[in-house]
Length: 95
Image 1: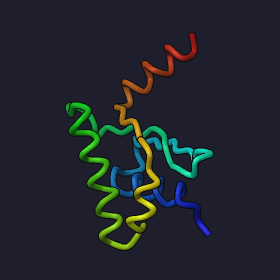
Image 2 (image 1 turned 180 degrees about the vertical axis):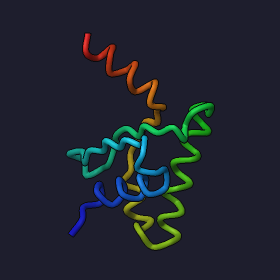
Image 3 (image 1 turned 45 degrees about the vertical axis):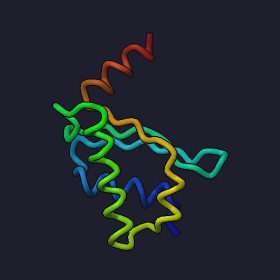
């Protein structure tokens, strides 16, 4: 049986395309889901637009029975990045 983390990762990859979409999610000790999504879909969008795009996908997953409303409430935060931002962040982290 897939974990909630795995199902949410699959939902995001399916919605944004597997090509240049990276999903790093963790299940926290508090039983909540948090992480990062990197996608070209976020290019040219500010943070509120990116979050709205992501949460629309997750709400649609509830509407289509892929996850429940209760499961959705377990998503704590997901940071949204473009591939370029992710690369720059990784370079800074590596220094």
